[in-house]
Structures are given as structure tokens and as C-alpha cells.
Amino acid sequence: MDPESRLDIRCPAQMEECPVVDELMEVREECRRLREMTRRDILTGYFNLGYLLEALGDEMERTRRTGLPTGLIMIDIDYFKRINDTFGHEMGNKALKWCTQIWRSNIRRIDIPCRYGGEEFAIILPSTRLAQAVRAAERLRAAVARAPLSINETHVTLTASFGVDVYTAKEVLQPREFITRADTFLLSAKEMGRNCVRYPGEGVEPASTELTQDEREALFRKK
Image (tube, rainbow, N blue to C red; front, side):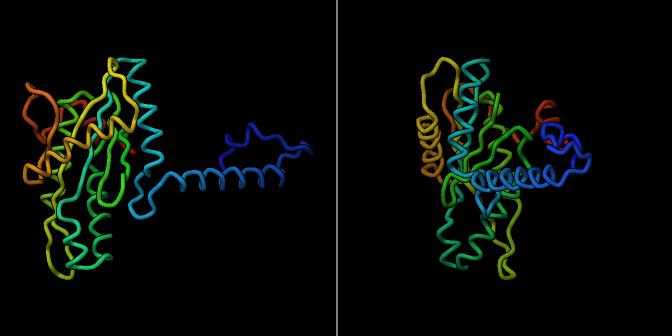
């Protein structure tokens, strides 16, 4: 047990080794664990929809305070139903875990990966401008596309479509409205043939998988 975590709990009997404190610490840890479970998707380990809305609201509030944009990437695995129909739902689950593990290893420590529902995911990018968010999405797209999944001794190439948007301090939006807006760019990516990244505005630098120095430091910082 971490001694520092006991400092705010006092033994009523003033004992150095207090069983009451130990029990309270166990209860506290169990509550923390249960709270964490309610925030997580069991299959992928990503945060769930409830936490997505909560965290996105927090980051949007931070944007209003600091002026730094909040980026949002919406992701949909291409032709996922075909994987389920061809190989079965167990292999479909394997594909979901495969993709999410790859994406987790290619995002920054501060980014917040969430499962939006089914084969659709959302990644919140705190303090991120549009060009940075587009580069991040392109990096995630390329990472999955070049890492085929082995299913029943068959190598299956998985791809995904990406919609990117950013929230700025001058806008008036709720989290669900921001998600809906980002989702329109995801829909555009699917209509454009899938396995691509779509985003708003003109004059944005072409997407690249090359990391900037700041992104490199954030990505490879020990987690």
C-alpha cells in the first residue's frame, strides 16, 4: 500500500498499523476500480460513450477558457459487417481489438480514445489545431492499413474512414453537436471511397504521417 495514500485517513485508535485504515483503503480502491469500469468499454479498453460526452464537454470548456482548439477524430472501420459475416463475430471482435490497439500506440498520452458504438470510435485531441488533427488522423489511417490481421491463417487488410473537426472558442456548440458535425466528415470519407481522411476548410496543409517535434515528444513520452 502506498504510504502517501494513507495520509488523509486517520486511525481512530492512533495505531501505526491500523486495520480500520487498511479496510478503508481497500474500499476506496474498490470504488475507484468500479468507477473506472463504468467508464470503459470492456472489449477494447477504450472509454465509453458516457465518458466521451463528459470528457469532450470538459475539453470544450477548456477551449473556451484558453482559446486553444479541441480536435475530434471520428473513425469507422470499413466493411466491418463483411468481416463478421465472413469470419464470425469472434473474429470481428478480434478485428476491433486489433485496430484499437494500433491506434492507442499511435496517439499522444493526452489524447482520449473512446468507443462511440459498434465499429465507430472517437478520439479527443486536446489543444490541437486542424492541421495537427488531420496529420494525426492520417497517421492512424496508415498505421492500420499497413498492418494486416491474421484470421484463420488468412491475412486480412483492414482499413478505416476518418472524419476530423475542431472546436474553437468562438463557437457555441454542445458535445453532441460537435460529434454530429465531425460525423458528417466521416460520412464524406465513406462516400469518397473509404480509407481516407476528410476534414473542413480550404487551405489546410496536405495530410502527412510525418511527426512534428512536439508530436514526437508527446507520442513517445513514457506512459
